[in-house]
Length: 414
Image (cartoon, rainbow, N blue to C red; front, side, top):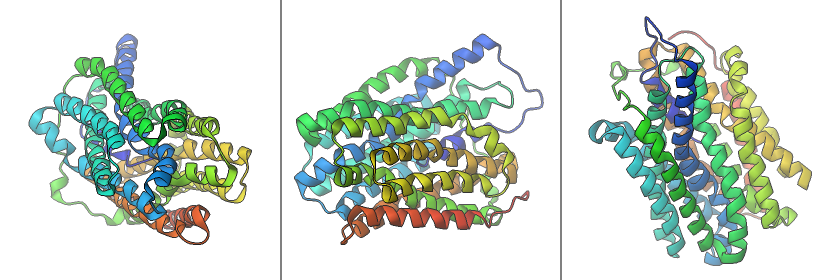
């Protein structure tokens, strides 16, 4: 999971109920979903290749470049900072230059920044490339969400969650593909080869997205009434909880592969299997949460998804076995992105349609700040005498604080 709720923010721009909703014919609905699947190459690049796959090359980079775990965490924070910047400026860029053009350029820029990481040995140069990859990925991800909403417009009540599910599932696809391709390359050609492989995969993803972009209608990038001012008090507990979750989950995503290599001696094949299971779990479970979260009120949705993530993190800490590791991947993958749906659903129930976008935007900022703080804090703790186990244990406690904060959330209309 990442600040994927920026997709929901983009989709919310045109989400207000229409007086005469139309339903697409089955053939057109199927075509629109295929188009959205093509646009889902953006989350595959932005999250699957650009962020999550960093865990696959990190152990080799750290050994070769002499980084501390705090240094490694700071690289993750640089990417998160860039991503947050990109998410914030995406709508303005799309309004000025056109959504299709901005999407294509930012996706290509992401591929270049990812591949260029193979060329830099200097710490600050690597940080600049991680920042640049984050900015371009954030833009591509958010504008892609708006394009996906435009491609699938005109459906019934189930259309929005279906679109969000198909689009966000691209994250899992990217994780699974990088899991199969990158660890063998890193084992043979080192971390530089890993970044080159990720860059080539990103180029291929951009090429696959191109036909979908051509067939997508331009979205209506309009303001949503957020300038009236938003009263944050109705969602303050979940606002705090979501920021904590951003800090907690990212430690697992960044350091779990290094932990498995150190504690269980995972090699390239086992790392590929673990990461593939995690990615496919995201794809498999993304569509199953909608009806469940629709029934849970207040902060219960976020509590449910976070609790399952906590179980996944706890397994790699307290059950250091290969079976425990793979079950951990399933639990984490199955619940991570569901938190996006939980928070988005809550915001849409509490606020009127004209305030959906600013509400989800504020939640995105909270999550993004958490993602910036989390890797640095966990890396700093991991440099202590208890190593990565301590850093992952800290993430578990942060997730526990997430559950406590979400428990205070009540549901009432703003």
